[in-house]
Length: 158
Image: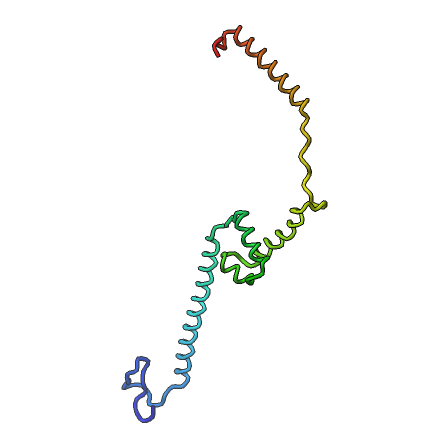
């Protein structure tokens, strides 16, 4: 701005201001404005990050049913969709889908009677021992019933 009075900060001409623009003052004002803007932007970014962390902490832990896990794992084994697509469809992390798929494939051999991971057979039931225990408990009940009846603590009508 040559020849006239320089502009003040608000854009109006000041009658007592020097006619030569003060370059150092302008640089300082610009530097101050930029510093304030950058610090404001950084504060907003930091605040947004803190809010995201708080929101993430508020999400409850989800327990998926075995039926849901098998459904997702079967879809992954089919291979018709990528893990990312399945993750979006079922709202589960791709790493979780991979774990369930691996568990399904590991356990598949046991379905057909693999000797390495075969279930232990049911313990053999000894019928004679069970009959002996039933007889013992029946005698005990009869004895206690008689004793309580004699003591008058149990009515004869049952």
